[in-house]
Length: 92
Image 1 (tube, rainbow, N blue to C red):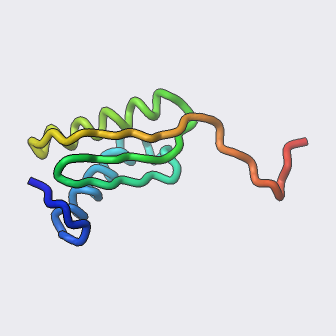
Image 2: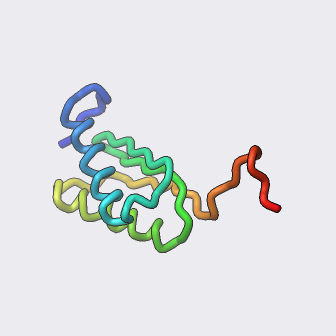
């Protein structure tokens, strides 16, 4: 069971486990990936170039939660779209 305190090693380990699972499943193609987990909620955020990558990330979270035998609410905030170009290098 996870605890509410973000300083607890078990929560930090679980965050890392979910993040690692997502990175492996999506071949590291979720940009700005951020995972925040408590005993009641898992929040995933980042950006992806396709809905397929977002789907793979969700599957990775589901696998990690099943392995841990817990079922918190999962909130996925992965924005889908092409990476934005820097203002310093405009497209011609």
